View 1 (cartoon, rainbow, N blue to C red):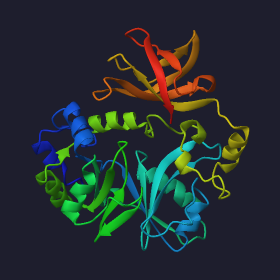
View 2 (cartoon, rainbow, N blue to C red):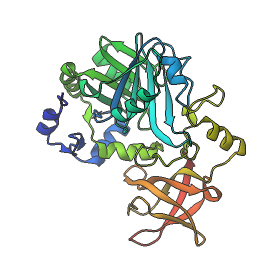
View 3 (cartoon, rainbow, N blue to C red):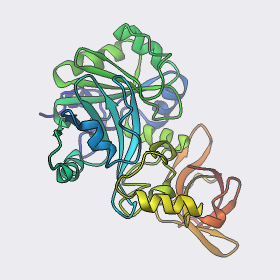
View 4 (cartoon, one colour):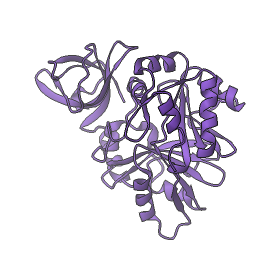
Amino acid sequence: MSNPLVLHHEKMGAQLEQSRIPLSYTSPVEEYWAVRNHSGLADISHLSLLRITGKDRLAFLNGLLTNEVLKLNEGTGVRSALLNTKARVLADLYLYAREDDLLIDTGDVPGASVKEILDRFIITEDVQVQDITSVFVHLTLQGPQAADNAKELFGLTLADMKPLQHKMIGPTMIVVRDRTGQSGYDIIIPNDEAEAVWQGFLLKGVTPVGQDALEILRLEAGYPRYGVDVDENTIILEAGYKDAISFTKGCYLGQEVVARATHIGRVNKNLVQFQTESDYVPVPKSRFQATGKEAGYVTSAAFSPGLKAVVGLGYAQRDFAKEGTKLVVESANGPLPTVITKLV
């Protein structure tokens, strides 16, 4: 089934990308400030969702994924990753334990791809994997007023909930999920109820927000995006993922490589956040230079109206991957003075 909100986006004059997800409604800058100062609502239904059922679901996933899954209780969640045997990242996942199943947000990785991998490992376990992306609308509500907006619409107090905790209102799930470095919630709604929720938020003054503004906010927060900053060639420890790995739970795909690299205490490169005072945005694969030496490369960047600077993510070679390190980014506009602001 197609996304029932697409017609609403079109009527609002949204610029839509190929997957029919809005890039912007008015301007990315206006939408950016709405999220920073108040709240914004974005349709992120292009991200995939899997439903895992069966009595062995927690033990099965615990043996494959990087984080502790067995201890998940109903209403809680965890970030994890699916690796290959060489500890390269195949998917960046968020898992939510519910009463009778477990929901996985596979993000930018197609649910069908993750399902295919999981199905391959099911032998005798009582586990079923279903791609439910097409029957739900996935919204995200971000900004300092997000908790108040959600309380007004749903009648729920969410402000005291911890990250990745969630509540159900019938078949609708509300998850504490920061995507912009501030208060935020994901709302996963059956298709036939999505229009009422979308319109309900807009009637309460919440600003609709597109992917262009979300991208700036993501980069300011220093959150990597799979397929952009991380892919199947990335060793998980290169990309940070500290909140996605259990170093005590035992075996999972790629665990030996992770343990070895952890014991050594380093990897050859690290994902970093950087800023440059130029308003010229370097393209992906632009090279970092330091005292004439190649020091890494850019993966994503955007101009931030709040910082009045370009902010981005990229990989810095180990010797340069330190907060405060000054680099130069090569660009078509000449060398851009750059500073590493943090390790991701």
